[in-house]
Image (cartoon, rainbow, N blue to C red; front, side):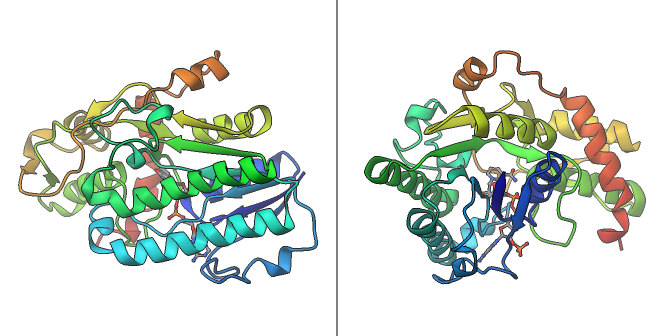
Length: 306
Ligand SMILES: NC(=O)c1ccc[n+]([C@@H]2O[C@H](COP(=O)([O-])OP(=O)(O)OC[C@H]3O[C@@H](n4cnc5c(N)ncnc54)[C@H](OP(=O)(O)O)[C@@H]3O)[C@@H](O)[C@H]2O)c1
């Protein structure tokens, strides 16, 4: 197949492209340098060729408290990116199936995190703008399907983890930040201070599992929104203990800063729909995925240790 991928240099995009390439597909890999999607004509060089699939992964965001400090820019940039990609799809590539990334933050934390609630209620305040741009992306898919019959898939993952994450100093998703802090504690003797009381619960999806699911659903499922979660969540303390054991750090030395921002208390996606679509779904156990992720981080430790 001929496949075009936005966000191809990101954490997910890099891993996805490796898998698609192994399957022998012809890929066009886009990023902010070779195709800045804030600009309306950015995709013009790709008008003539006909693509079978478009994976739209590009988004302008970071983890931690980044969304709190950049709501205006996030609204403008992500709306530009999504509008330009969807408009190009409708005008030049209507035969292509569009596979887009949603976010679990789009859900109202007071409602069940089930697909029918994706556009219902209000996302958590700290992630409101980012979440609303993802809701608008889904609204765009619905609208273009309704009026022009275009085919889409909208995947809503929990936090992804695995080897290959950024170590360039940007704000990291909690699990990578946790690994980084504990490795620094172990090697530099720096105090390990975690945000919140450590009892907030989080769900993780191993990136290799996510890609297998994504490729399967891209082939077999049309015009749906589907949660991709692990079906279980653990406390931050649990993750911290596992990482400490793996790197040989004293877990009891970890401090908790209850004054810091931690987001939702719990976040676990309802994945009944996914289980029905993939009844033989076999996910990597958290210990194995975490072990692989920590080993990869350890191998890159010179990037984040003084
Ligand atoms: N990672 C997760 O846990 C997670 C969870 C839920 C949803 N998602 C969604 O999954 C997608 C991929 O996530 P990720 O973790 O791989 O993100 P990421 O590592 O931050 O990568 C973002 C990608 O978007 C590109 N990009 C940013 N601004 C752009 C612009 N103006 N024009 C063109 N490309 C631009 C970046 O290009 P450069 O490399 O050139 O900057 C990069 O390739 C995103 O839509 C995200 O919202 C991720």
